[in-house]
Image (cartoon, rainbow, N blue to C red; front, side, top):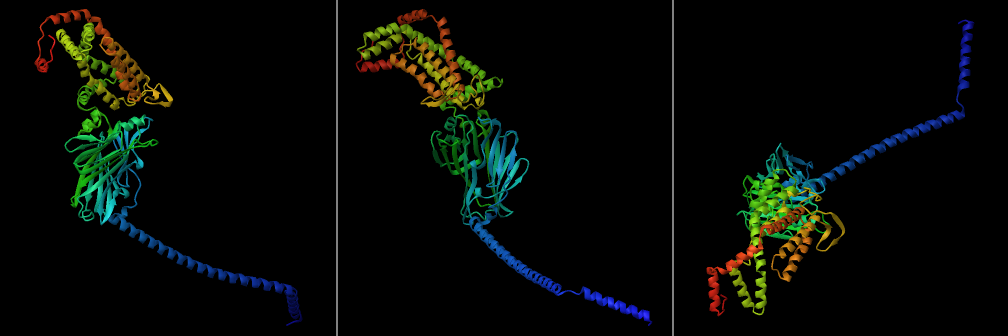
Length: 613
């Protein structure tokens, strides 16, 4: 190695030694490095501890979740046991789908609830309530229906359980499964086009081993809160109740004006929960077995529902693998022709009057009214023409009554003379009066009998107009609804026996009644007490009719007005002088005694009573 190379190596070594010395850490630097190293070691240790703690927490959470899961499982198992103990094979139906099902046609829309498998609401598409809302006969919880029976030593009520729906275009099968798909109770509903009737069949499929063996019937319960549909709630309650028909076609009902209940001890064909203008009827294809229980309860002062109605039916059950009980609902208006077209005497729910009054309505008034209704006139005009037609039919009787009154008026001077002559001898007075009437050929009842024959018409109209759904919400002049009262002034207070409004049609009826009373009394021999009563009755009717149908008051006003016109017309061509002349001629003729008269005279002679010749 030469000298230059050796020198280079020495120089490089010296540089390296110098650099190492200059860059070596001081004591402070060594202390800082140690502190940093210790901090890093502590962090690493803490991380290791944290990871260990996290792992332990995870294990604890997993253990806790496992405990909770086991507790939930135990609770579920306990709930299942409790449900099974309470409902038996129907425990699976305690909960279910809450979506509603719908069947509808051009007349009604029916909604069904899976809970209970019941009809939940019914809407009549062609009618409105007095508030202008769609008429819904019921909705929500205002309706209850279900079967009650024993199964697996348990009392079961299907209204508490959930059904499964199977829907087609015109039918809905609501099935309550009894533990398996081949065992169920089915409510089968069917709805045809243009029909107010909803088919309802209860089918028992494969549940003969579930239902108690000693069961030979199941109970069907039906409860409704009848909704307010009309303006006058009080009048609606007075026209709402339960009707029912026995298997022998006899129709009966519970009283409208009070709460009531009745156990029907014979077979029943149908039960109706009837309101003023609408009704709900459950009709058996065969008959409901006895007993059937029906019950009504009026709503309270502050209640907005009309009445609470209940019915429980007996459905036969024979423990066969498959059994059915067929029924059908009628949800619709109380329209006479519509109800009659359904059959089963459903039209007898409309109270047209008993006996002859009902016959007059069914065979005279309703046919004429329906005929006039076919012309699509205003109902005010129809009532006017109906009044004229009825007055024409009664014209012969009215004229005969007027003639009899005219004869009595002509005889009044002679009657007054006899009354003055024998006023102290009542028996003799009666004999002389009868002798005068007999010789003159006048019957004191001649004017009363024709009037009595007209009474069925007057009373029939009293029943017809308030029950005519055709007049419902039909306006005429100032009356907005001819089926209820018209009001020209609503009072801020209530007048006893009158009301809280003023009905103009009722005022017109009262004035016309007073006027016709005055016209008639002037041609009749009426004692002062009788006259006082005749004038008092129209005032009483003013309070009675103030809350009645405006159509009824309008009819009576028209009838009175026409009667007054008839009175003046009869007077224009009935000559009282000629009547008096004929009566005097009749007195000269020999009187032919009837057999009845002869028997009366014989009885009088046997008792020693001397009769006038």
